[in-house]
Picture (cartoon, rainbow, N blue to C red):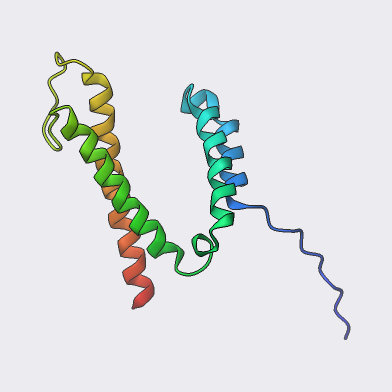
Length: 124
C-alpha cells in the first residue's frame, strides 16, 4: 500500500493571523483596531528577533506577560486615584476612560486565572 504525500501549506505567523482578525473586525472593535493591528505586526517583527519568545513554554510566557499587564492597568487606575474594585465616581474627570480601564483589569484577571488553570492542568 502506498500513501500519497500530503502537501502541507506553510504555517502563517501567529501575529499575522491575529492582526488580520482584528482588521476584519475593525468596525465592531473600534477606531483603534487598525492601529492595534499595526502594533501587532510591529511586535511580530520584534518577537521574531527574540527567539526565546517563540520557543519554550508558551503558556508560562503568556502568564508572565499577563501578570505585567494587570499590574500596568492597576497602576493606571492608581495614578488617577481610581479604585481597583469599587465603582468609579462618574462625575470625576476621565471617569469613562477609567471605568473602561477598570473593566479591562478585571477581565484580564479572569483570563490570567484561566491561563494558570491551563498550566496546572497540563502539569497534572
